[in-house]
Image 1 (cartoon, each protein chain N blue to C red):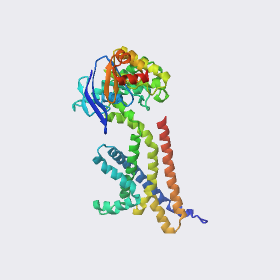
Image 2 (cartoon, one colour):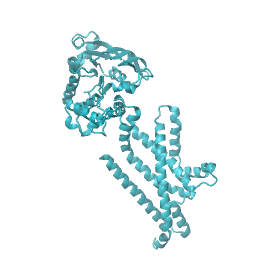
Image 3 (tube, rainbow over the protein chains, first blue to last red):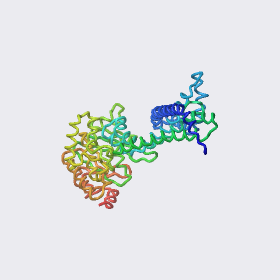
Image 4 (spheres, rainbow over the protein chains, first blue to last red):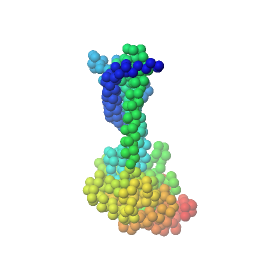
Length: 218
Length: 240
């Protein structure tokens, strides 16, 4: 720690820049597909019929109940080779993150919708609205407001979890941190730099979400 | 207007409605009274199928509710409902609470819906509250808005599910006054309530329910002044 070598950080700056762009990319893909898939699974979990609900329940059980680390390895080395001889680690990483986030987001959606008082749906239906209209105009606008804080939390977790893709050599931020560590046998320079960059990313996101929350409150 | 035949309904193994037969005529005000757990709210909620029933038949304005061909949304357009806990939409202004269903369901223009809403707000004495959100209303005001919201659909029947039970005592009067006015204008109404004064003054007919059946029915004079059944007498002796 006494001789902190800024010069090797400068040397690695272009790689960190490339890495952080992939990290942002992975996170955005994970947020986007995780949200869409999560909405679908959340709706599936709210179906009355138990048999239809079962696969959605188990989807959430599996992806919430096993480590993302293991999921990434299974998907990259097990599932992807079924479809392609040379799986791209970035694609495998994006898929793993999306599938994993979807499980958590499904629960956020379900909890958000079910937290709205039953009387709201009854009032809407008693006025002649269809189920879809009641959802669209009455339930979802109220539920989404309640979903923003937990969703923001999930997005922050997702940014940090994208670092696990380094294990399958996806060239995101953490991958370059490990590369630098391997080249120079230094600990503080690569990992502190990487930590700081993640912190900037997550703090920016929470600022953004905080603003969104305040706007919804007005 | 509403014909109920042999209506039965159970929650699990508990039968809450054990065969209800009643005919509600146009422009009639029917008040349903009875102890808690007597099934009166469940009965009311069956009339627009917010609560599904197991047996029997309900015909509302010519529609058989259990007929798979019946469009329930169409039936509900004609049946307004007012809830014990108001159920106003908290994310919308009072005005938007009232105009939403006429615009989305009846496909009225915004102008037409707004004009109707302002007219109704004037009627319930709350014109000045059009642009506030429900959480700034008192209970009595909220319930009057809820009545206006239901009336905006121009329903043929209004159902009231204990509309004053969640109100502070000093606010009961303002809600009952609106309901009285409505009755005077010839609205067909079914009212579940504990307000015996209202039942006596406004009701054309009073149904006394207990244990999932209609124990006794008649004019307010018959029910309140000369009840025939022991259970009716014992209930009235406790509440009057």
